[in-house]
Image: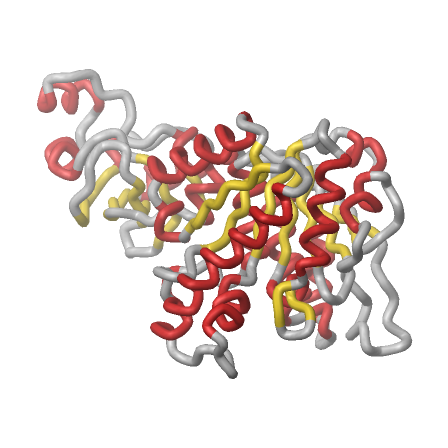
Length: 367
């Protein structure tokens, strides 16, 4: 499918707006937000989700601070003020165009739990059913450095997956991916990438801006989306950028969705977001079996660590302690302890209920 076909089929679009994009003269760029509202209004047959930074900047202006907060506590306090101020700006401007917005504040910690992840997904879909434009940001008021996405590019990619979006637009001050630092007059804009893995391989070997820092981060975040058939455009800030993109104009860098076999969204959540509640050690026979696409049976389990319940995520370790995967377990830690090493028929006798597998292959990801 070519670029124009992909764009024409993009009925649900995620737009990522970073702090630098949202800033103008040390303040929130209200003119740019108004341009977004105008453009979104003109595409009423499409659904839009905005992943917006800018809470700290909005808080600084609201509090009249002379400098950026330095400590985590200061940043959290400023972000708390800024989140309220920023959503008010979006609400006031979008309301002028008859668009209702809704705020969602997400954290990595919240999305690591499968149940809370599903709740967030359902809330997001319900907002779209209500014809609301969700404004999403990481919850900087409570997040700390150990449990943050680290970059809203990654948050935007996970939101694109969670919402079953058809297009992810990442607005960038660089305006796209270049062969070298964009300040270099010899640097050339890369108009499209059809193999993000190849581009990442080049980025690893490169010492340019393209190969490190922000550009590499954008490629890594884009890979999450394109690996799930969601095209990505890294594009510059302008008053008509969303319109230009959706009409197929040549702006920024277009990254085609991967042609490889796609993993399921559940397995991506397991791999990228889930936080194990315990660990199970398996023998070599069980490792060979799960690597060949079979479910994990109780007979292959040697040891159990941690306290977990049925439905929790556990890490899967080989007998030497190397983590080889993660999965959603069908039994709690007491039950697994009582049936480890047993055949399924014997395990069923011990537990007094049917036992097929401890972790089904569809609920497992192997590294």
